[in-house]
Image 1 (cartoon, helix red, strand yellow):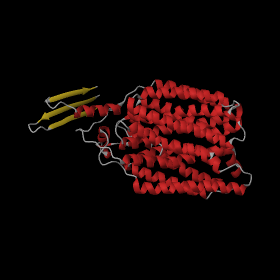
Image 2 (cartoon, one colour; image 1 turned 30 degrees about the horizontal axis):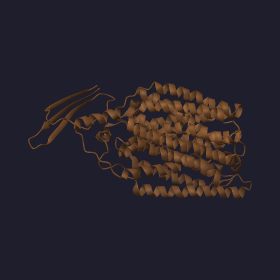
Image 3 (cartoon, one colour; image 1 turned 180 degrees about the vertical axis):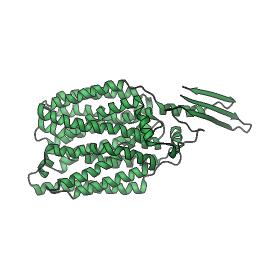
Image 4 (cartoon, rainbow, N blue to C red; image 1 turned 135 degrees about the vertical axis):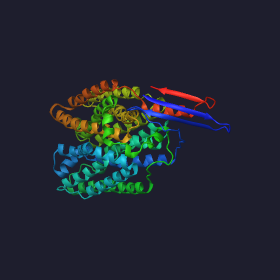
Length: 478
C-alpha cells in the first residue's frame, strides 16, 4: 500500500501550494514530495541513436562467424561446434558479469557504462584484425570474447535510457529503438559476412576477404568510441517524467544492490517474466546461431541464402519491435500484448519447423520472416513489462536479470538443438524449441499485471491537478 496525504492551500495572490507526506510500504512506488517540472530535450534522440549504433556494431560481431560457420571451420581447421562457441561466448560471458556491471551502472551511471562498452568493443575488433591466420584461432576467440564482454554493458540498457531520457508517452517507443539497433546489427551480421567472405578455395584469398571484413568493423567501432567520448551525456538536467524525478530523490547511499536483487527475486510476477523471457529469447539465440547449419543441411551450397534468411528474420523482427513499442505507448496493455506476441511466436516456430525442409526456398523466407516478426518483436515488450513490474528498482538491474536468463537458456538450447539436429534432423531440433515456447506461453499467462510505473505517474498527475478551491484533499491509494 502507498498512502499520500496531500495539502493544498490557495493564497490570496492566486498561487497554489501543494505538499504531501508519504509513507511507503515495501515494494510500493515512490513519489517526489512535491510534483516537479519536467522537460523533454531534443538531445534524447541523439543519445538513443548513438546507443543504437554501438549496440549495432557489437551485435553484428555476435553472428558474423556463425552465419559462415563452414567457411571458418575450413580456414581455422576446427569443428563446427568450436565455431558455434564464437557465438555462445557472448552468452557465456554475460552470465557472471551482469551482476558487477549492473552494480557499476547503479553507482556510476550511463556514461561510464557507455564508455566501457565502446572501449571494449573497439579493442575486440582490433584484436580480430590481428587473428587472420589459420593458426591463430585462439587470437580470434580472444577478440570475440572481448567484444562479448562489451555486450554485457549494452544489452540491458534500452529500458534504462528510455526511462532516464524519454517522456511517458514515448518511453516504450524509445526502448524499441534501442532494441532496434541491436537487431539491425544482427541483420547486418547475417547479410554482410557471406558477401564479404565468399567460399573460395585459395586460403590466401580467403584470408584477404576475412581481413577486409575485420578492418571495416574495427574502423566503425573506433568512430563510435570517439563519438561516445564527445557526445554521450549521463542524464538530462530536468527529468522527463514524475516517475524519473521520484527515482532521483532516492539517496544513493540508501540503496543496496544486493537488497535490490533480493527484492526483485521476491517479486513473483517478475520471476515468472524472467523464465518466460529466457525461454523465448534463448530460442531466438539458438535459431540464429544454428541457422547456417540448418539451411546448408536442407539446401547445400546456399550460404548466401542462409544469410538472407537470417536478414529476413531480423528485419521482420525490427518492424515487430517498433510496432509493439508504439502500441504499448498508446495502449499500456503490457500483459495482453506480451501474451499475444508470445502465442504468435510459438505459432511462427511451428510453421517454420514444418516448412524448413521443403523443396521451395522462397517458402522458408516467408515462414522465417513471420517467426522473426513476433519472436524479435517480443524483446522490447519484455524490457518494458519488467520495468512496470519492478518500479522503482533500477531498470538496468531488471533488464540484466532478464538477459541473464536469456543467455543461460540460449547456451542450453544451442547445444541441445545442435545435437538433436545432428542426430535426428532439423524438424526434431525445431520441435524441441516449440515445446519450450509452449511452456513460456503458459508462464506468461500466469503473470499478474501490476503496472507500478504507470500508477506512480498517475499519482503524481493527480497531485498536480488538485482543485485549488479545495482546502484539503486526502487520497488513500491501496
